[in-house]
Structure formats: structure tokens, C-alpha cells
Length: 225
Image: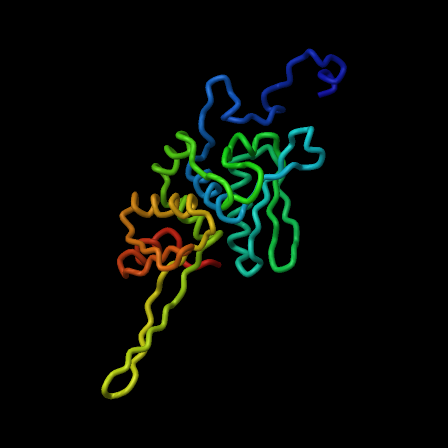
């Protein structure tokens, strides 16, 4: 490093350069792909990219808000970020009721081209072709990330009046809620690819309630922890 400081024309050793797969002469996709698909789900749900300090320096912070109720998900979020950008630091910033998992890099907009001004539900959100290839290959991880950010697994309790009195029964279901039509469509598209039945039970909510569909999600999502 001292040699480079004394002679700025000297090329830095590759290990000192934080590489970006999208900025290479021949762009490639982030690796590991499964971790990227999971992190994409977290970003689309509860993440944002904003300037880190002076906007003219084009350094960006990926921020993902994680509820303190689920410490295991905070760990998974940090692990996914470190996996995709191992040369960048990851910080946990305590907030009221939640933790901001933050990492600073020049390359977050390259890795998440959905970044743009304003809130995600106020603008068009669509996947790039290279992202769609990853999502098609790792649909489970995308769904897992989306449900870990904007979803939940709940027990639905139903009352049925009978001649001999009322009868109650419970069944489990997954709910995913997001204001963006585009993000909900990305979610349901992944469910379709996995053969998981779903319904839009509210304008902004997607429900998975069929017993076999819930069992399928339980295989790779399960309750938050």
C-alpha cells in the first residue's frame, strides 16, 4: 500500500481491490447465487440503498431493517451481506424495536439496480435479466428472503356454528404484505415456479393456506426465529 501511495500509477494487488462482478469487462453475476437471491428478497422487502455521506462521492449504504423480535434473522441478514461483499464491513445499528444492518460500498446500485429515488412502491420495480436467471434458479431463497422481511407464518383460527354448539379449528398459513404491486408479482411469480398455490386475500396481501402449500414452504422457510 505504501508503494502505491508513493507511486499512484502502480497497480494495486487484486486482493486489495474490492471487486464487483457487474463492473468487470465481462460482467458476471454475484456469487454465491443462493445467498444473492436471499439478500435480494430482504432488500425488496425491508431494504434501501442511500448515499453514505457526501452524495457526490458515490458511496452507497445498503440498509436492511430487521425486527429485534427475530435475532436469528438479523444473523442471517448479516451473513448474506458478508457472503456477497466479503471485502466490505457490516455494522449493526440499534434502533427502536429493530436493528439496521448496514454495509457501505460503491457497488450496491450495481448489485441491486432496483435502486432509485423515492419509495419502492411509488416506482417501477422489475428484475434485470441476470437477476431473473438467479431467481429462476434459486426461487426458494428469494421467497425465503421476502417472507423473512415482509411475511409471517400464522395460525388462523376459524369458528363454525354446529347444532351441538360451536366448533373451532386452526390451520397454519403464510402471509406476505407489500405495498408494491411489482414486488408482490415477483413473489407470486416465484411461488408459481415452485408450484406453490397462493391467493390474494387482500389488496396488498398474498396468502398461502392450502395444507400442501404450507408444508412446502415449511421445508425451506418455517417460522421466524
